[in-house]
Length: 144
Image 1 (cartoon, rainbow, N blue to C red):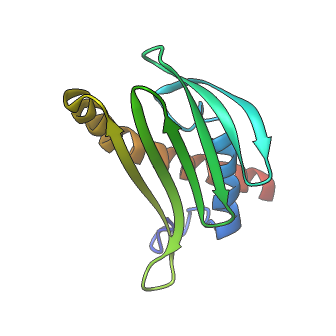
Image 2: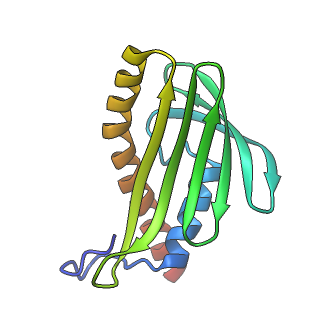
């Protein structure tokens, strides 16, 4: 997450990344290129329910569960697909922070599953990079 050899990079701590993940959960549009609309329809102490619209026009409802300063999990379960997408804050062997994306996907159509999985393999790593970049911008603005 933080590149040790990049002295000009804004260093993020766990709280910074957690705040970025919470912003992404509440409004995914700036963070995920494939999402064009995101509306929170319900909030609870440990998460929220949101409706997102993808570029394809597909509208889905996701339950988002917060495990403070460790994981944000996005759950979708409807007649077309079931997925759980985890965004985990961790540490590597050297104690440096990491941000890991993991997805569990179950579609009723194998061909569709391959297409969605391929899209996730390219789109979600880009979303993680955007999440870190926007989080760095927010930290830099706060520090200015």
